Length: 110
Length: 112
Image 1 (cartoon, rainbow over the protein chains, first blue to last red):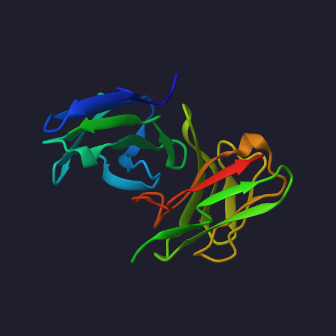
Image 2 (image 1 turned 45 degrees about the horizontal axis):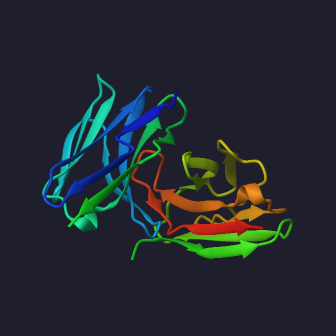
């Protein structure tokens, strides 16, 4: 079983829809990252969080440490949001090693 | 501009021909690491370095070498590349293990 599981693996939605991507993990963590990878391949860090909620523009990330679960929400989705979204956790019991989920491929249709 | 720079972006090479992928960061970060990304497997750590002259193996180090002679540079060396090293490679850096990671643009390597 993977230590970081994301769902769904693939998601296609219409422009304007509210998007939710989920991440569950099984290890003790010191922080969780959400990353965005565009079709060109580059990876950008969206959020790093260890508790509560963070917001940046139309993106919102939440984490529930007790339930070992995080969600990434996109409001008023746009075709330019089409990308792979990757959840990654820092394993507090392994020198903060980063463990990555396999990613969620999001496609927003105009 | 704060960035992590990898070169080359694309490389096609033949089995056994030694190659180096360079990685440089301009943020004075202590922690650097190399990952490979393969379909269905996600990102896996190859090697990491917590500071100059300090390197350690990640999850998939076989067939790779690294060095950290200066803080800004962390090259990835494939002494004798094989087709199973065909992959998309990313270098990343962080100020410390507790902070946000910055990624290079990736190097798509094909070994034939």
